[in-house]
Length: 206
Figure 1 (cartoon, one colour):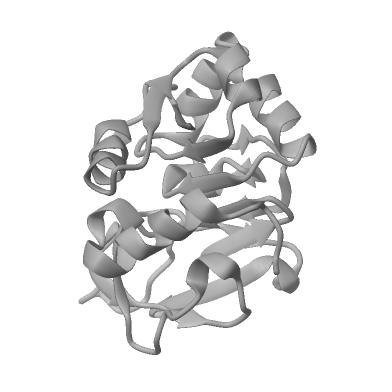
Figure 2: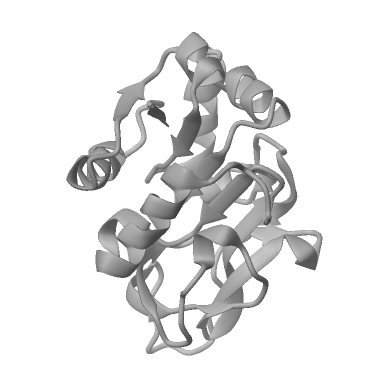
């Protein structure tokens, strides 16, 4: 059973619909005990980092997610869920979960023809192999909607990048945690393949 973390962020139902389409058992839950006992966890979200962290703390989910990470539960962060797993976000000067050391800056673009948020389909470049990115080809596109982006301190935590004037991390990871700034659940067949691999992933890099 994959458990989808409910912390009042947007996009939870889109993730569930994608898993239902793939016939992958899942449920949306705010229950800390269920998160700790989950076989796999998806931590999605669209929203504000500060407000989201407040809800996580109020519900005890901050500690539950850290416990699940430490016990080796395979975890997939999506969009806001790829930012909050870092130690800090510039959005609201927010202290986050700290599962990966790093910060989330906002896009500071000089090209006035480019808008923030970065929204729409864009290609990613795989920079380091990961089981969830197997068979992702150069030029494969995924769907993005974000104004901030994850920036781990250690470059070895970056598995894919995207370019939007600046080259930014599009997929990051640490041990049993993998996270994408893009939305696999909204990225057609290529995105669904990532969700399928996650449902089979044992939480290691091999």
